[in-house]
Length: 444
Image (cartoon, rainbow, N blue to C red; front, side):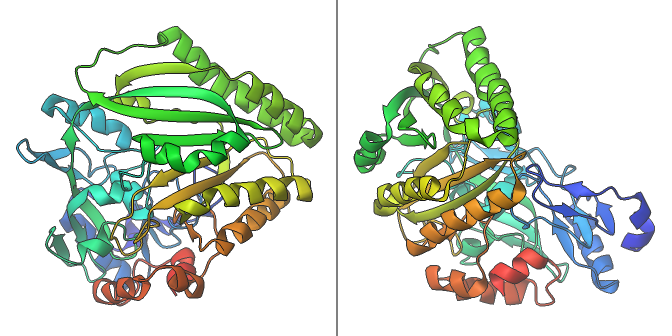
């Protein structure tokens, strides 16, 4: 049965990503239940001259998951497949969401070593786009992959083991090498985090950034544009049996839901309509910050709810360049007269050896710029263009799942193993079954 026959175009709803930055009108939507199903849909697509694209949870802001041909969701390829308690290695369906992981791993006393601050993504989506957390001793989520199964562009099921050099491409493959159906992760014994959140002054925070990322397990900060206010976050790892402490459920609900989401959404909405009030609102918000300390299981501390929709650009640059780049962004915002209601987020990660990891071969700092989804689209794009120009001057590598305008020529200049990835792609997808406009731009 062809993709057209299984799911007629007239029956397919328009797809839109979470941030509202990308849409697609796929010819068909497929929901495979096995590698065999995946191989069959790839064969069908090739026969009818269609491309294939898995979409994950739609949390990428870039066009990496746009599927103009056959759109694939891995919602039926989820859950725990096997656990090796001695090694801490677990195998899971690639469509498993990050928020499902705690319940799956807790009975085995395990946890993922590091996570980002959003857990809505699928394992395949998060690892294929280079999702990361913070901490110079820890790599992105893709570095936790020690084996993977995927179906390549010829319909061949490949099991890539740790000893196979192709894993350096597959672990962070941009969806360009095949449809990942199963991953094996290297987990660690469950642990707690003691999170210390505190207000700070931007000049002091930038001056001490290098020391803080070195001294602490996990360190990041947010700077509120048009102000001197920052919020710093330090997470320190502890044994799993460390008692939970800190604000109670009601206080955390007020802080995390009412203030961080509902109030933020209200202020952003007002700021989108009357941009001139944004600096005042940011100063009020920044000066209202108060310190708090929370100790809890890692999975309850790493991720936060993000209900206010936004657009995001993030670049990885050499760690030592972060303070200078943030100062340049700060100066640019005031010089150009932008009104930015969302804070700038700054993190760090360890160097790794994955071919297209944003931290490939260098310890990296990450600077993320956001704009509220309701802000004027033209003004937002100009802002992102100006941020991008600063990051490019520092040999920046764009997060693959976030907004950027880079092409293959530029990316080849900042990724030493860019052409090595291309050689793997030639073997795995010689007919470009998994291509789309975004991949054509960034990979050539």
